[in-house]
Amino acid sequence: MISVAVRVETECGTCRMPMPVNTLAREVGCQSCGRPTAIEGELWQALLRDPVYEGPKMLPNEGRQSSLRKLSAAYTRRGPCCQGCEKEISVTSIVAVRGQALLRCDRCATQTWVRTVPTEFAGALPNITHVVGEDPDPLVMEPANAAEAATFPCPQCGSPVAFDGVNRAYTCRFCSANVHVPDDFVYRGRRKVVADWFLIFHPSIADSAPAPQAVAAGLFDWEEPPVAAVDSEGNVYCAAKQSHWYYDENNEVTEKKGNVLWSLDSSLKVRWLRRDRSDAARFMCCIEDKLLVIGTASSSPLWLDSKTGTPVESSGAASPARGVELSGAGPLACDRDGSLLVLKVSRLRRIAANGAEVALWAKGAPEDHADEVRHWDWDEPVDRPVEIRGSVDVLHCGPDGSLYMLKELWPDVLVRLDADGRTVYRVELPDQAPGEEHQVLGTDLRGNAYVLRASQLVRVSATGAQSVVLTAERDALPRSKMSIAVCPDGSFWLFGEEGLAWKFEPGGKLLFASEKEPRPRKPTHDDLVQRKANAAAEAYMAQAERARVVAAENFRMAEELVSASIEWKRRVDKIGWVVGALVLVVLVLFLLWLFVGRAQP
Image 1 (cartoon, rainbow, N blue to C red):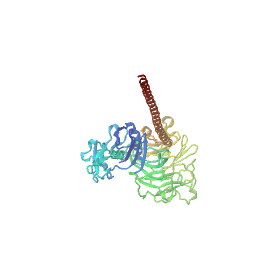
Image 2 (image 1 turned 135 degrees about the vertical axis):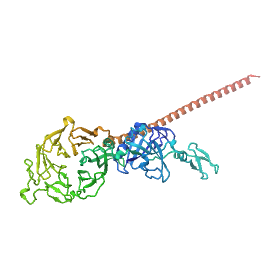
Image 3 (image 1 turned 60 degrees about the vertical axis):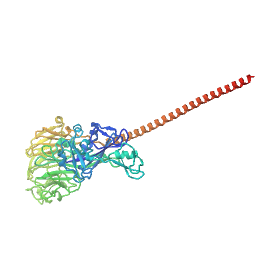
C-alpha cells in the first residue's frame, strides 16, 4: 500500500503567528489567538494535488514541497506510523476502519485517529481511502486522554504554577508571590507543533490499478515514446524516461530525471512498478517468465521476474547478452529460445543462451565456406540460409522463430525469413518511414506483422498481403514519433510523446486512450520560475505594504503630534488672554479704588 506523509502549515490571518494545520478540515482554529482560519475545498484540492498525483511516483523517503498562498505543504513517501514512538501502523488495522476510529499503539499507548476520506473532500483526494494521524476530533477522544494542565515556574521559589492558558495573573501556592505568565509562554503552551498526517492510497494504485488510475498516478508520464514489450499472455511492459522540475534545498529550479519500468496485464490492470532503474532501457523482451532489459549504457543486462518485477539471477536462457559488447551494436532482437540477434560490425550475429556466438541459422552453412558467405541482397533475397552482412534498420523475432528485417530504401522493404533462414516474403511498404528511431515493428501469433509508417499502420499477413489498419487522416494516428507493441492475439499498443498511449483490438477498435483520462498538469521549468518570481513579487509587495502601513502610521502620529502642538498653543494663548484680561480688570479696579479714595474728604 502506498502512503504519503503530509505536513501543512500556514499563518494566522489575525495574529500572524505560524499555525500548524494538522487536520483536513474547512476551518482550523489558531492555537495562539483562538480565531478560526477558513480553508476551502478548492484550496485543499490545489494544495494536495502534488502529494496525490506525485506521491505514487516518489521513491521511498523522498521528500518534496509545495505551497499555495499562505499555505505550505511538505510531503514524503513513507508508511503511516505512531506519532508517539514512530512505530509503523499495520495496513490491516487501517483498512478495517469504517468511518473513524482511534488506534492504540501497543508500544507506547499513543492513540492515532484514523478515518475514511470525508465525502466533502472526496473530489480533492482521488484514489485516497483513509487519512491517518490527524489531530483527532475532541468528540472521539476519551476523557482520560485530556492534556494535563500546563505549568509555569514561579520566579520567586521555582515551584510550578498551573495556568489555564487564558488568565495571566496567579498567586504561587507555596510562597504567595504574584506570578505573571508572559505571552510567549502562553502561546507556547497553547500552540500545537506541526505534525505529519498520512494519505493512504487505494490498494489498486500499487496492486492491480486500472489504467485510468495509473494515468492519474503518473505512470503514463514521459516525453519520448517508451520502449515496450509484450509477453505470451498479453501483458505489456513499458520502460520510460521521466523528468520533473522542482525546487532544491537552495530554492533553485532543478530538473530531476529518472527511469521507470512497469507492467499492465491484458485487462489494463497495473501488475508492478519499478523506479530504481539507473540506466534508460534500449531493448526489452520476454523469455518465458523473465524480462530482459538492456540499457543504453554499458551496464549489464537486467533480468526481472515478469510477474513481480523483482531482479532475478540469470540462468539458462538468461545470459545471451554477455558474449558480445552491446554498446556499439545496431538493432537487437530476441528469439524464442532466448538467443539474441545482434547487428555488430555490419554482420548479423546470434548469441546463444550461454553467451557464445553460434551459427545464425540452425541449418545454415558454416562460416568457413566462403561461397556461402555473402552480403544480403535486399532486391533479390535467396531462398536458402545465408549469412546476413550489411546494414539493417529494424530487427524483430516473431513468436514462431521467424526473423523480420526492415530496410529503409525507396520504397522501404520488409523481409520475413523462417526459422531456418529461408525467405518467406519480400514486400515493399507504402508511405514514408517514421522520422524517429523507435519500435516500429511487431508481430502476433498468426504471423501478421504490424509496421508503423509516417501516416499509416500497415498490417502484413503471414503470406505478405498488406492492409491498412490506421491512417492519420481518418484516425489521427499514427503520429510522427511513436512506438508499437503487438500482443499475441493481434491487439496492439501505440505509444506517443508526452505520456500518450492507446490500445486497440485486433480489428483496430480503440480500447483505451491515456489522453482521455484525467491527469495532473506537470509544472514546467517556466512555471516554477514564474512561481518563484511571483512569490518574490508577493514578498516585495507585502514588504512594500508593511512599509506603507508603517509610513502611514508614522504620518498619522506626526499629524496627531502637530495637531496636539497647535491645540496646546491655542490653549496657552487662550489662557494668556484670560490671565491678561484678569490682570487688566484687577488693575482697573485698583485704579478706581485709588481714585475713589482720593475723592473722599
